[in-house]
Image (cartoon, rainbow, N blue to C red; front, side, top):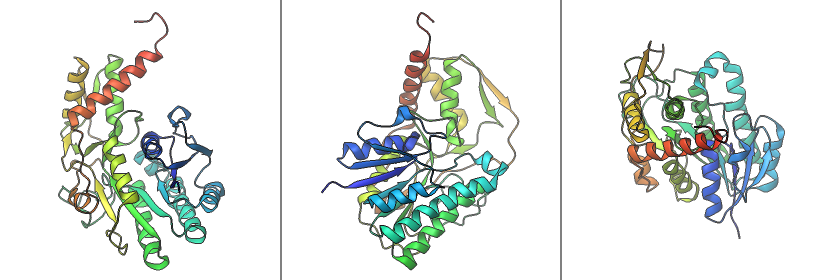
Length: 325
């Protein structure tokens, strides 16, 4: 029998790559996306698309009707700054929307494995010394990160009390083809666009702040392993939570340097004031994912950034008017 997966946010950056991989592996794929940030052009051929919002009843009804083997929940309000400006909206999407899906699974599809896209970049806050391991204290400094941690707590609750099969993947700063310039990893997309337009690259602060940049194909591989692997029994919030990154903190200055080299560009750097509240050092320990998911990242930063730039350059060239240079 063909296995079925439902991917929320499947018209987005990570979601579309995830849906493609499931299709390639022979799964039936349903995609839920409200197209607020996702794009129709990202939808892979062969998937069944449902234009729905996770905050409404339609997405939950789809879960109840299709009873997927796996629910990969990627749909989210993903802008940290927007969460600060409007925490009520952020919670309505990221917490209440997730609860609607979990309730549908609890009532109508309890055999579904629920895989939730959490964050390894901001969930731990600034009170730890990286690399952050899963069991480290969590003191998030934004409503976005608070919402992600809240859903993880709900996942553990549904596992303990209702016996659901739940997993949380704490992504580092995911980058690659189709990336939008949102969130901290969006710096790769932003820098690629500015290089292609011949504009300076803006560096906030001194550029030494670090993040854990992980290529999208490595993230999708982690999703597949977590979706199908044999995992420890879910119990506490960290039991089935896995950091998905590289274990290396990369300064934004290095991102700029590698992209400029990949592009053969000499665009200048422009330094802007440090942004208040920005974490200075953030990267994760991926030992647990290696041990329990048999997963490790395989794409080097140089290769991943080069492949990203090539994709943005091709899209940039395709968008130019005929005859333009």
